[in-house]
Every structure is written in structure tokens, then in C-alpha cells.
Amino acid sequence: MNNESVLNRIKNIIEEHSLTNSEFAHKIGVPKSTISHLLSERNKPSLDLIKKISENFNEISTDYLIFGDTLSKNHQIEAPGGLFSEVNKDNTKESVKESNNRVKSIIIIYENNKFEQIDKL
Image (cartoon, rainbow, N blue to C red; front, side):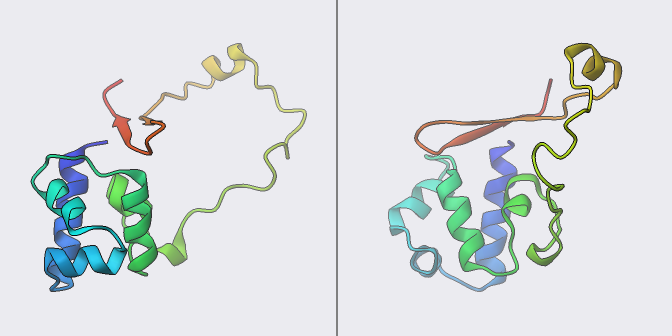
């Protein structure tokens, strides 16, 4: 995850809604210091913070905050049917290698709910 991009999107939300940093913190239910440390780049945004922003701003999805995707919450891509809906599908290591699928990014979620996105693989 590019933390600068996430931070810029959070700054844009604050600006577009004409909120002070204190008002933004109050709206999403976090201490003012959390927003202060985030905006000063002392701390990185946590998944919990991103979730709170998305829950308190109806038009903002977590996908937008993390990846910059512009899909609204009402138009998010839904996961296909059940996890094991294709029981007989060949998912061996060799079949996956042959599919030419390449990993675009990896998201690592730490125990403290902080996360990191790795795009350069």
C-alpha cells in the first residue's frame, strides 16, 4: 500500500467535507491525536481507521481508501458463490502456474491491525 496515497485520500475527504481535523476525528470516533499523528506522518493509517472512515462516510469505500478504486459502496464487486462452489476444479500448483496469472499486490495485515501493501513484486 502506498501510504502517501491513502493519506492524500484522507486529506481530500477532510477538505471536501469542510471539516477541521478535530471534527473529522469526532465524526469517525477517534482521538484528535490519532488524526494529528496521521497527518504529520508520525503514524501510518491502520485498517481500523480506514474501516471507521468508510463506516462514517456513506459514499467512501475501503477499496477507495486503500487502492484508490472509485467504485461506490453500492457497486462493489461481490465475491462469487460459495468458497467451494467449484469442487472439481483443478487447483494444483502446476495448473495455477500454467494459468499465467501474475500476482499484482500483496496485503500484509499485522496483529495490531496495521497493514502494508506490496505492489512491486
